Image 1 (tube, rainbow, N blue to C red):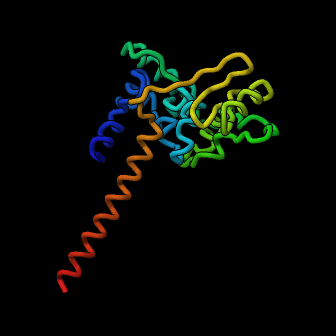
Image 2: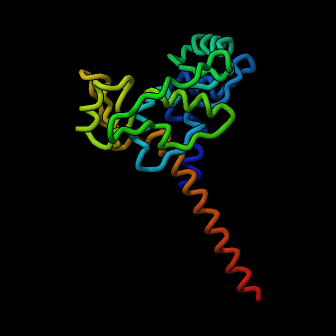
Image 3: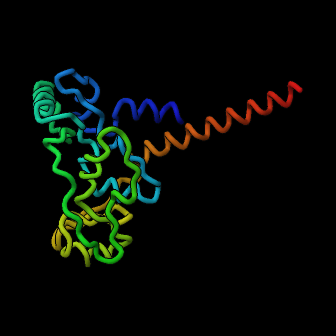
Length: 206
């Protein structure tokens, strides 16, 4: 299972053609630094909410500047790979997260529910700053017209203002974040089992 998931993840099988092309070919003039998802770690209960709040931005490719993004767009067009998004990591492009907004009761910024790491973590947190997570449908519905950005539920329902709601997921679908989490869990289990085997070997050798 671990080997299968690692191969699946390495191939970026859940990504769109554009992002997969950029991440696989990685030419010097693009200088890709991974995807937004590569910088995130999310507990199981929040995976659907975070995936829904980010949407396609989860697959956006991190690059240093507009020049690198332009090279990536050129590559995607040359390969007829479809659309692809970029997050710019340079300080000139990044203006910081939006000003703090007092959250209505029971809403949580996604940035409070994930662990962000890596050299451009501050930029990734900025990407996360444009939405809110609500514990249930009714809370999200009531808050959607009061705050800027999107409001999502733990089930992955998305509210955009007072008039747009979307949701649902294919039963067989496995999200990018859930795949990353399962790989991490399986690796930890593998190491625990290896340690247990080694202890048994030492006991038998006595």
